[in-house]
Image (cartoon, rainbow over all chains, first blue to last red):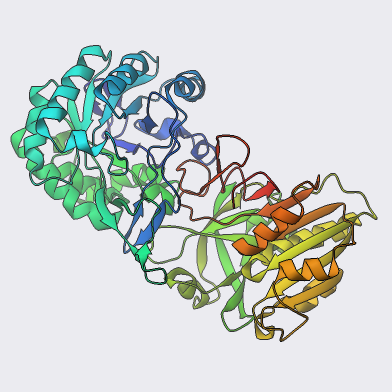
Amino acid sequence: MSRLEVDLPGLHLKNPIMPASGCFGFGQHYAELYDLNRLGAIIVKAATLEPRKGNPTPRVAETASGALNAIGLQNPGLDAIMTEKLPWLNDRFPELPVIANVAGSTEDEYVAVCRRISTAPNVAAIELNISCPNVAHGGMQFGTDPKMAAELTRACKAVSQVPVYVKLSPNVTDITVIAKAVEAAGADGFSMINTLVGMQIDLKTRKPFLGNRTGGLSGAAIKPVAVRMIDQVRHISALPIIGMGGVSSAEDALELLMAGANAIAVGSANFGDPQACPHIIDALPKAMDQYHIETIKSLSTNL
Amino acid sequence: MIQEKLTLVAQEQLTDNVFEMVLKGQMAHEPVTPGQFVDVKVPDESLLLRRPFGIASVDPNRDEIRLVYRTVGKGTHLLSELPVGIQLDTLGPLGHGFPTAFLKPGQHALIIGGGTGIPPLYELSRQLNQMGVVVTHAIGFGRRDQIFYADEFRALGEVAYATDDGSYGFHGHIGMLLDAQFNDRQFDAVYACGPRGLLMAVDNRYRDHPHAYISMESRMACGMGECAACVVAAKRKEQLLKVCSDGPVFATGKVEI
């Protein structure tokens, strides 16, 4: 057995590293730089029932050791994702597990997307996006209310053919309340954390820099928040956690795994280094040696 | 597109806040369409996003790519202070550049540039010259002391200058220069890169020209068409285009500027 291998509900991963949703699209251009089969899995861009145009520009602003983004779930819609994007990945990388990020404005929309996208041959799991901070309806409003989060999880679980990982928002007073609620509603796991709501003012115009006023903060700046929240959720739940938030090195990945994550998603680090994922995968064995870690699995305290 | 560590072999200050860097590596052997750009990682861990720069010129014989940039923020200031010999993680060439294949020797092209939009137009003018196309340049700057690449452009064809304060050439912005001096001149191709006002003027003026192109700028993150940060709206249909991968060059009349 490989030192890097990880088994999670619906996901047999040859290594624990996968690109996070939104930073990687459907991988088509990244595939020009490296073989996507090297990845443990791929979390693809959020799918909504209808195509979404997203937010006004500018949609991205750099911050100290991070970035604010407010893309606003721009995506080509479920039909195009089912007939073009997912088949493109399946034709070229049939062994690569795909985690489909699902978003919507209403419960009905989430349910309709889960029902259909979970039948795609290469979709191994769903990441239920109840935490996008950049849309007016749906998104984070589901993820910050335990009752709504639980109801949505239950409804999506009922129609999904694959395990459902609920993507938790850090923009709450107590993340464990939401985590407990969605676990009770049947979630198979968590992915965490989504971005933290932030804002930047342009001194010249004295107005918010981003077209959406606010955006989600990601990057190295948020890693300590991710570590703290993964630790909190690990203490109240044994469910698997796909950890993310500021990971850009093998050491960062190990830190989130030690906090309680079982696999790692890499987000905005892909902007700094488009080959961040393979570079982290390559660096893991040596970093594991340095800290006397035999296998990634051995770090999992819950499974 | 490749990702490569290019070596900084020269850096020169061209004006008060404009610098030229010469980068050496195999990327110079990639086919470059003028108007394409590279995405450079500033060697500072606190700066996450790469900086996109239009390719000012490429010399495969010397393995060199030249970039010309203005220092506007922390990233470009850091770049301007880098010592020769340092390696810069660079991604490119990226995007779709200016179409030129339709032009024949002896035909006429107009190149319109302003400020830091000018660098990629230099490689364009070089390639058009090599094709035997007759090139005229209309170039705008704020002031005389901001002008760079004057000798370089003059060697490639006629140059008409405009400055906002009238300290060199025509007194006024590029749109006014075009109105004053180019109304009765016909060109087989028109190319433009520069600030928003310049692009709007060119887009208006050459909306129905069959071969007129503008190069857009936008805040980018991934630089290769995956993250949807840098979109612009298409004019005639309900569609968003990505500046980094659908552009940065678009035909006139196609996008909201």
